[in-house]
Image 1 (cartoon, rainbow, N blue to C red):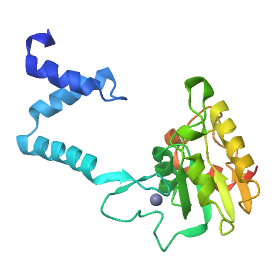
Image 2 (cartoon, rainbow, N blue to C red; image 1 turned 45 degrees about the horizontal axis):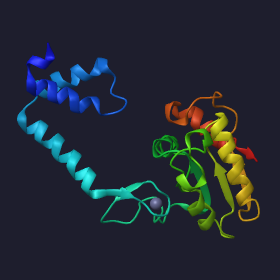
Image 3 (cartoon, protein in one colour; image 1 turned 45 degrees about the vertical axis):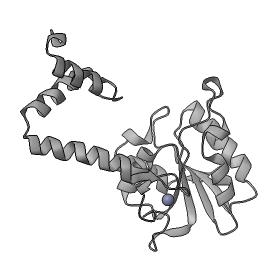
Length: 199
Ligand SMILES: [Zn+2]
């Protein structure tokens, strides 16, 4: 039926390329676009293009930053530069930031080690992490998820950093095994972080 309305079919096809858009929501989004003011949709498409053009990864922490400005995390004067929290993804960094209970620096790995899928240390930002940890770093928190891959990645990094960082810790076991930080509530993430333990 949709194929008979070419412009809708085309819009659906483009939206289908966006991961995480459940098919149930796809048609709601199409409906939203079709019923919104043209100005609103113009703003949306401008925001998408501008974000694409103006945002890049920070070469230190690998979180997204404005291309024309310094990283607001790495260059903040209010953050504790002696503590570094290692996370799998930027979304997980955001979950930790939302707790408001962490004021150190971050390092985003870009995933976890998964030899079966061809993801080794070179596919992640592990080399940069090892390079950036020096004697000024009092603590490295390995906040990878408690999945087999997350734990293996943390163990690999802990081994590489064992003579470099003052202390290496990992999150407390408040987070259900196998789940991702990204989907935890603020208090659970905060508790796991504040009750972290030595590796
Ligand atoms: Zn940064």
